[in-house]
Structures are given as C-alpha cells and as structure tokens.
Image 1: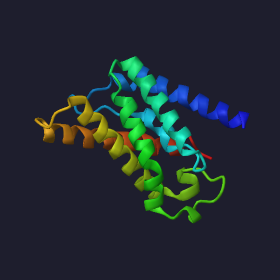
Image 2: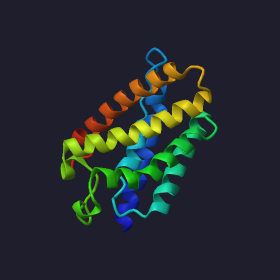
Image 3: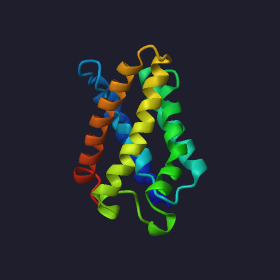
Length: 168
C-alpha cells in the first residue's frame, strides 16, 4: 500500500513538473499545447474507488491551475474526465475482462485498447478544457481545431511514455 502511494505520488509530482516547466512553454502557432500531466488519471489502477479518482483528478487539475493561473479550468476538465472514466472503461470492455490487479497500460491490455482508451479520455479532457477556456462558441471551429491538434500531440506523448517510461 505504501509502495503504491509513493509510486503514484512520485508520478504526480513528475508529471506536474514536466507539464509546468517544459510543456507549458510549448505553443506551436498558438494551436498546440500538449497536456502530458493527464497521463496520471489514465494510469490509475482499475480498482481505484470513484471518489478517490475524482479527488485525485481535482487536486491534479488544481495544481496545474495554480501554476498556470487558469482559474479552475484544468480542475474542471480533469474531474469531468475522471467522472467519465468508468463509463469509458465499460464501453471498451466489460469489467470481467479486466483482471484483478491489472493496470491500464499498453503492456497489459495491448496497444489498440490503450489507444482507444487514451483517445476518448484525452478528447473529453481537451474539449472541456479549451471550450471552458474561451467560454464562448463564437470561435467554435478555431477552438475545435485547437482541441483536436493538441489532443493529437498529447496522445503521441502518452503513447511514447508507454514504451519509454512506463514499461512494466
């Protein structure tokens, strides 16, 4: 138990630092901003209670909000995605197919499954984040494009992490 808390606590700190110190300074054409910190929510164990997922997502988003001065937009987007996570897991496969103790990783469930899971979760997060950020539908297509392109680059980073950092 202590080992898991330390592992996920370290991952939380690592991902927040990568996001705040490196990735928040990447704005290619004001379209692309990868949000790699979201990987924390994706990699939570299947057995994590829903209340804990929501609480961790809130603190993750709030931490990013404090560093970026974004007034709760990251917290909202993270909580929304964490709330949708059990439904997405249920959509991708019945609960019986997830072995007890298995983790949502490429190494345990395959590249195709993980890609679909990450894609749906990242799209929910990014669309909520970007539309809440502009809080208007006047630039609907510009925001839509920005969310899609940023999602694409976030997915690339997340998939790369599965082969470089989080190999089990």
